[in-house]
Length: 164
Image (cartoon, rainbow, N blue to C red; front, top):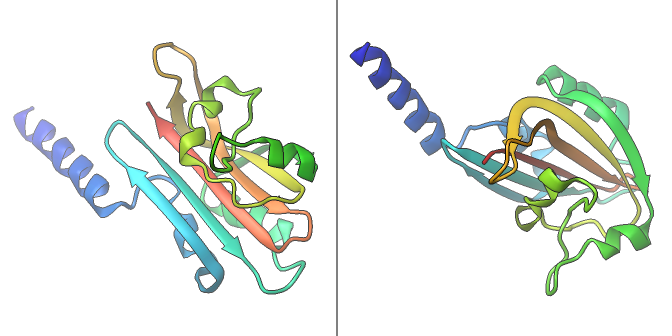
């Protein structure tokens, strides 16, 4: 039993220190046009936000992106289109952030999700099989991975949060 506990601690430290963590597969997607890559993974939770910007319109093919996500066990839950006015209203006092006010669990993570895209978007929500727990409650969700694609398919952002 002592060895099992030690093995668990070593595995947790390995993954936390290596910064592999959940949603790490996105870091290898279209590396040549990746602009930002925020990642903070720990043993109690973490978050990742990645942003890509292509030089040409219609670069990001939705079908390819959804297949890539599915290949890495992100199951599509739904998608919603938001116009530019709505997207631009998701702001903090001094910096734009990405948040969905109607989702209390995910809105608690807004400080980790920069608002890179300022045009209309289509937002794809995924079940990632990782729990996101709302602090101080028993509320949780596995639908905690999001991909936002700009209307012209030129910009893309991935947001993922898990744990507490």
